[in-house]
Amino acid sequence: MEDAQPNSNTRPAGPALRFVAAGLIVRGGQVLIGQRRPDQPMAMQWEFPGGKIEAGETAEQALARELDEELGIKATIGPPVTRIRHNYRHGGAVDLQFFAVNEFSGEIVNHIYHQFRWVKLEDLPGYDFLAADRGLIRDLAAGKLL
Image 1 (spheres, rainbow, N blue to C red):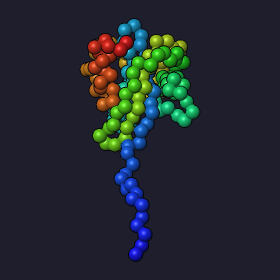
Image 2 (image 1 turned 90 degrees about the horizontal axis):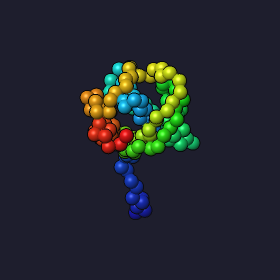
Image 3 (image 1 turned 120 degrees about the vertical axis):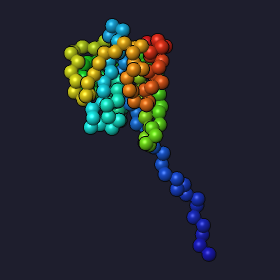
Image 4 (image 1 turned 180 degrees about the horizontal axis):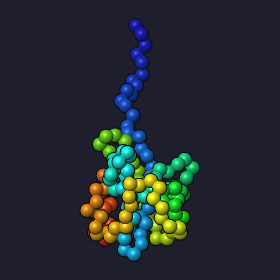
């Protein structure tokens, strides 16, 4: 008789978790939002600028780098606003850290978005945001966070 193999866990690994930093860039009572391009996953949905936190970076360093790459600005990263973990239906998960950005230098240049807009906080619910951002959108529109 063969020795029994230890009980191995054959369950597939859970969705990959991506760590992301995003900026709530505020100017005159409005916040900057960007619309994904038609050729991107989750095409034409709106989001806040930011991106993946690379190995060895803090969330603040990643956000400063992403804002330079995406918008051509040198941002002063302010305090954390909120953190959200979201599992997407298609698989995959994201851990989002949002920071206030009240100061930046340079003119905003759109390097990645289909379009971007300055929007009043109370008008945010009228845009089709990524699922991970929707709770935040409600809170921002209600004046709870900024």
